[in-house]
Image (cartoon, rainbow, N blue to C red):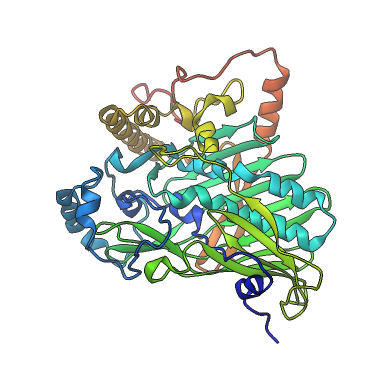
Length: 462
């Protein structure tokens, strides 16, 4: 007999509601075209009416917010009509008014806010609770991605470093420009986290489907357990007309590649009046596909679990327990940032002798953070033109860009949405950081360092 709906089981046993997640990596890695048309603020509460089929009835209300005027909507609609049905990742350059002062590489680091859950997954001896902790980590990261401001696309060779948070050392790098691909590596005494991030998109007019053609692996150090994540696709609705909102529906699967145990969480599609929004429910299964633990919650609130029998019924004498709750966030923050998101942009989380290619140092990002849109737009255009010039220079010389901290492997891994070339952390950053930390360097990172991700220091001299 198939296990019962965990939300119904939880309700029957006195537990809370369900759990819904929109896939964070998809939105954050959405390229320069339609993601820059993502203009509304997501964060519906209560019973606000949402039309799952889209609509234009609230376009005027959105225009009054000052971010996306009606004439701008009409202009971009005319421009984007030719892309209907296409993969529009990184095709068009649009203004900074719809951006947030953060890059995609920083968004990758933002996933580490609740990294203590992976520490707990490594510490526990229970193989099923290990998956409860780990899957809760992958749910918790989505809270920060309800905001629909567009992060800056990284320049080829750009990096982001993070220390001073939960014992983590984090490095990410833009390893490819066409197609846009980023790679990241995080490590603590309890786990390593490795991701190759790519995106496939399909523009449908006033909406877009986003397919996360990426690979995420976590290795728990105590037992060498390897966990593999397959997230669901995401749909971004009302890109140009109406209030923009995001929905994911389907399954998220986290598999223990070492034992065969897994978590399958079903993401409820959002319906009229917001029904199902934020909710996700599912089970932890053993290698024989027998349910062991039911899981239910809301990604913008908390995650819960309860031991169950082979039919998904709660075991006698057990109760629904909370495993994770979202941390308090600043009230009325301009970009809907959490406290941790502000730390991502801060030099407080930067190591000494920060790489000059770090995202914090981007002049367009820093200008936008200060509210200077004019300077931000100018600096963004300058960086993009410099990148194009360097590409022409590199091709003329017959040179090929080589990432510094990640190596392209021979591995091509299949995903539900296409094959993926995998980049692997090469360990050189660990050596670099150890050398810096053991030196007498006292250089304190600050915004006066010039941003420099470039392969050629002086293009004029070249």
